[in-house]
Length: 121
Figure (spheres, helix red, strand yellow):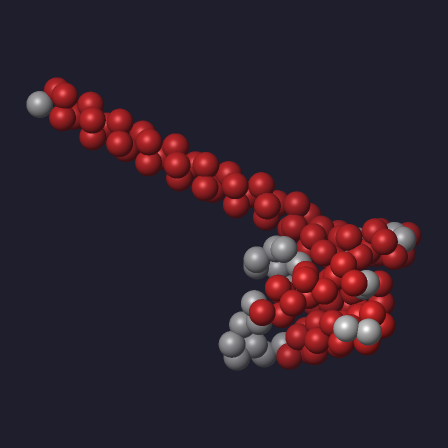
C-alpha cells in the first residue's frame, strides 16, 4: 500500500510539473504579445515610433490570442511589408464567427491586399 501511494503521488507531481510547464510556455509567448498590444494604446509611443517599430510591434501583437487585432491591422495597413504577410494570414484565419466588429477584419484584409499588391504576389 505504501508503494502504491508513492507511485500515485509521484504521478500527481509529474502531472503538476507538466501542467506548470505548459502554462509557462503559453505565458512565455502570450505576455510579450499582450505587451505589444497594450503599446498601441500609448499615444506618445504611437507618435514617436518609427515605421519599423510599429511593424514589429504589430507582428508581436497579432500573436496575442485574446487581444483585438484592430490597431495592429491599422499599423500594418500603413507600415506592413512582405514580412507581415504570415502574421496577417494567421490573424485573419482566427476571425471569430459572427463577429460584430467587421471593420477590424476589413482592415486586416485591406492590409494584406495592399502588401500583396506592393510586393507583386
